[in-house]
Length: 198
Ligand SMILES: [Fe+2]
Ligand SMILES: [Fe+2]
Image (cartoon, rainbow, N blue to C red; front, side, top):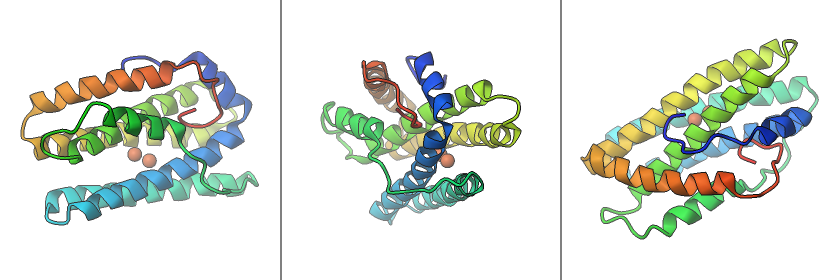
């Protein structure tokens, strides 16, 4: 799916359904982190108005997603709690840094890591959507919508990367290398966890 090299292990879906509450809590945090990541990236590039506009629009949408998921938590009597460390995102950033500095600076990798996180979230929302029982109609409707939104965000990050770099070819080469690293992280023998990227 999208640029992903390997599909999610079916063990993750089983684990996610076993503790859907934990997945929802983690999901809410992921939306908040997506918003704050977009804002921090926008703040680092204040002269690039197109980038600032696209990333602040994206942040607005991620905050809206956060509020939607937080509403579900409230309805289910779940509390948000402290944000957990997203090991997947941390591993991905660390892996990206092993590729060496990109000549035009860190923006390209930050945008492409953002694209990969969106792509993996999008894939997992679809898996959840397909696995949720019929009585979870409301949640299925939410994941249908978020699946489409995250696919769109993936495209936004790629478009921004291409605009920043001025060459789709260079962007695709770097994305290929990052996607290989992402596949290794997802295929590592860590036990599946009831989190969006676990
Ligand atoms: Fe989102
Ligand atoms: Fe997103």
